[in-house]
Image 1 (cartoon, one colour):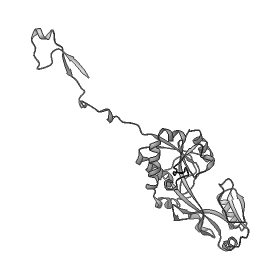
Image 2 (cartoon, one colour):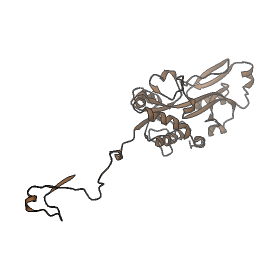
Image 3 (tube, one colour):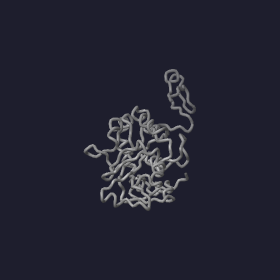
Image 4 (cartoon, one colour):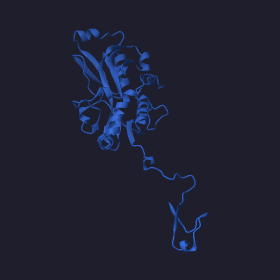
Length: 278
């Protein structure tokens, strides 16, 4: 700031000059920089509000709660690291899955992780190839599903000879391709689907058997009389789906975030979370 002073210390003028001259001196608070470039102004980081299910889904999310636990799951740790690298502040919200989808469509949250689905394409933004299809090279993770069957009920021969194969899957699960002559039996939950297999009421169910290209299984399956049939019956890629509003406002950052996600993938951490305490 500028201060007006007719007679600074150590400055002498004649009486005639004093009446005619006004001396300007620069005043500043102690410790302040004389000049501070505007480029040094602190700019707040963009905030990405991420919504995920309030039910445990290992290895991705832990705990059945709307709270964020200290060990939140492999996907949350992965996303935090990637967001930090590109300069995005991550805000986490948990709610029922369908509610997350509704909030994304309404641009009330900014992101969630899901497989590509044509029904969601009109309100989600996801990494794409030049032809407009989803780009698996920039997915946040990959999983494989295998048929799990009783050890004393080998199903390979049934599949080879195209005999009827009964498979239990939880109601509402996204359809996937099955061998010819497969009959689907609805189940109330993944655990219920496993019970139907163990009790001999159906031939098989689908379970996670591969994570990010590495063969894996949930720990509790080791205690059940089941075998997994490799290779995986179906592979799926999880994408960071952004809201239209967030992408249009932060297009460059969004592209950077999708690019960084595969680079920050820690396959071992995903496998470790499969052993998270029940």
